[in-house]
Image 1 (cartoon, helix red, strand yellow):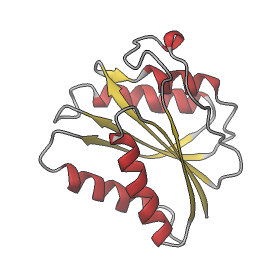
Image 2: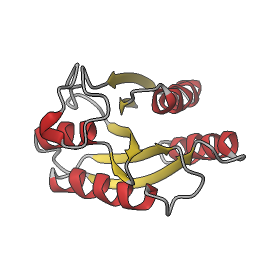
Image 3: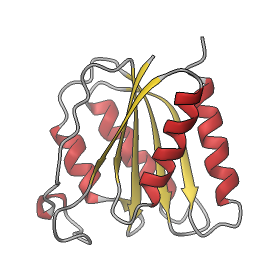
Length: 158
């Protein structure tokens, strides 16, 4: 299966999760491409109109898509919001989503950000199959990443 992983990552945390997921999917025999985008300037911009992205990763040509982003100010980072607004119709594409957040608990912005992320993708025609939130300062962060990789990979088994 050909899978695209598209992440918005500034500090590298979200990218690291994407890399671990890519490794797991590739070890199961999938063809995986990981694409990173980030803000060119104004890294801490609070409004999507203030964000300029370094790239707009393509979504065509994949059997499945996985999107990753991060929580900023208790909501979805504006860079991903801007990217999602510019997406073409995803035509019922099966997608999974993950977020990284600094706080230990999902209710500290993660749940709200995930709701915004899934809604923005569903508005473009995507069918969201799985979601996960990685709490970066939680003592079980590594376990959360492993569980995300296992759960997301399991849905692509034949």
